[in-house]
Length: 323
Image (tube, rainbow, N blue to C red; front, top):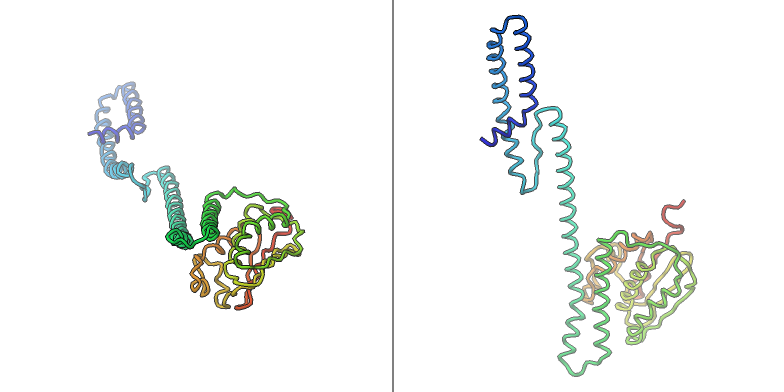
């Protein structure tokens, strides 16, 4: 009975209008001394109104029960409107349901991508952790070796931190004029121990350039590229040079196979050398490319197997939104 009462309350305007018209009709018939016909009018109109209300009741009840059942779950289908206004509201609700479903699918895809990226990162960070664990079980490991593995772990943690920021903090960007020389020298200094351990020569050329970029994100790209260069260079040198709004990092390492070059920026792709060396997760260059796009730069790679790899970062010539 409660649902019947709610239905009648929803029809209050119709019932009120009927009562008003009935009162006007009764008054008119009374003034013309024809009030006896009022009962016929009442019986006819009440029967018509009751038929109309009964006919409307069952579709209304289905829609109401659908809404009640959807209170504690996601609404996937909008109720069908019976009137012009209800149809308009139904269309708006359908659009909102579609938008929410698309947003939910987007969020689920983003969460899945984050989980996949975390799996790649976990694979990479396990290598220095395992190496450090092995060193702790032996008495021959030096403090220098342990510090090197700890440094790698810290670098991988910083990589994941930057990744999380890039995924969820789109406002974390400050484009300005940046001097390359101090930034490059400060970054290179972090990896001095690896240059010394491998006896690699470092060559810095023409770094007195000022570029338009975000200093923090540029540092992240430089760290990823430089760490890769050190990782895959067993002897020789690494050269960092700036010219004509470009920053180039060139090494004399093992190089990249021609068939691997088009995919080096793909997420999770390590290439033949990466799989042989078992040192890559396929995440570093992917994040570097994504970050370069974020700061408006272009990151490219050229390589010759057995001769080395050249990574070039081309900076924008003007600030964003400026003609």
